[in-house]
Length: 190
Image 1 (tube, helix red, strand yellow):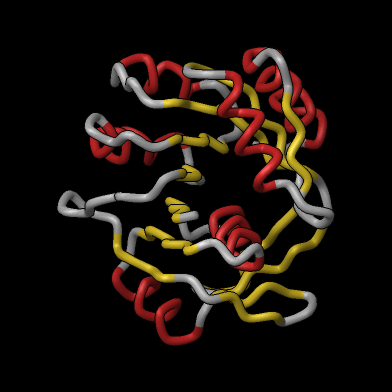
Image 2 (spheres, rainbow, N blue to C red):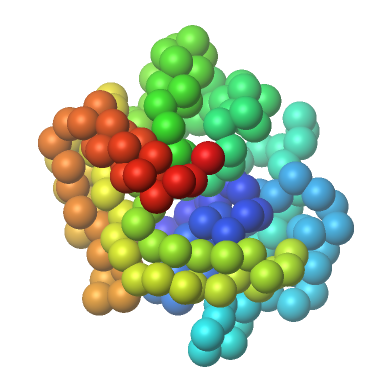
């Protein structure tokens, strides 16, 4: 499957590595040309096992064409505005992995017609450098249907879930984000 990951931070690098590990054709879309070149040259490295993952990298800008079947959007909420404009004519599935709830208003504002899943990531990861991520805590990805067909959520969740990359379906996206927000607040995460 062709999978895109937008965002070259800790979660974006981690998701790209895990999707590559499953033998998917992965393209990581990053902000800087420098990071894209480093990933092209070195691949993505996931610690603690220092395993290298084959990932194509592209700089994401106003001319970027995203033609993947499924796209994980792993950027900070304040970077979403520029990214969402690219998906008005996109026919694939969008998976949003953000903390908080502000991205919901942006999704509504952009009137996207895509199949959209809202998710949270319970894995802990730390970006070490432009192409290296440390997986510091095993968790799971929680996904909930925001709009589209529930059968596709189930299909993709089953297809992508593995022993070391669990995906759990949640019924209510609002409740999922609210619980994530509360747990982040309790942990003292800004």
